[in-house]
Length: 313
Image 1 (spheres, helix red, strand yellow):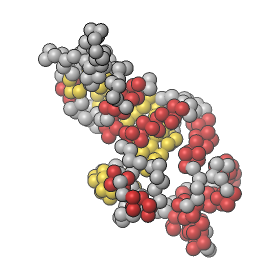
Image 2 (tube, helix red, strand yellow):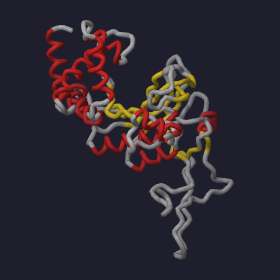
Image 3 (tube, helix red, strand yellow):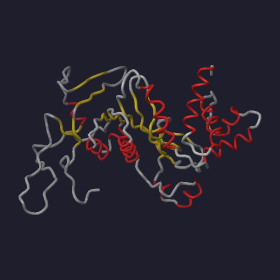
Image 4 (tube, one colour):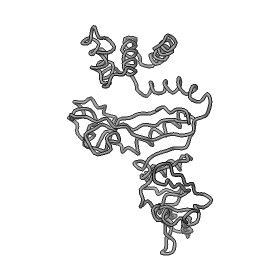
């Protein structure tokens, strides 16, 4: 790292130090961040101690371990500070265009790391022993960076008091599905005033009807991958109207369907498109991969938009 880079790095870490609390955490914070920038293959505490303080590896290991695992600093405050420091540079030439919901997996060999379980690993492309973290990133054509990051705690972990206690899982951390975690992050970003963008998500999140409906309810545009069997309404086949209230009983919030007015699966919709002509509101693009079709459609639900049962959460 040259002199200018070192000065910028030092100023960045000093700014982060403002939100980690006690002054004793500043040195391990600096060393930990520096270690993450090294070419070391493994970025766990022990190898980082070896590259940041080769003459006192044991003492450095204890210092970094205490900082990462035991010090009571807030990761949310650190990420908020990173956003404050980074956003002006990223938006200097162009505004934020997208909010990206995604998750990252960390393959593991053992069973004691918090949240580790046999689950799908995007890094490996298959089911395996790993941890998974859900993230929300802001992006434009030039860069992207995470503004929220939370470890997913599987049900088995959340419901095991002994395992939670041994791993130090806080009592307030309960089971949340990945789409629920993502929605929490979206709401927090809106409350924090993050610059708006179109929400992007793959089918792992796009297949969740509750998440898509919640995003629409928040007034957010989104582009989502979905499963082939997902039912949708389109401009050519809009959703039916809600039956008018008779004035007696509770007003209905259910749309009335009939055999001649049914939603269509996205797979059936794609197969019904005319060859060579996709219509005014369709976009086709193929770049060394299967044809990617996108069209304006609304998730299918028997409940009318904007209406909610009193028993609904």
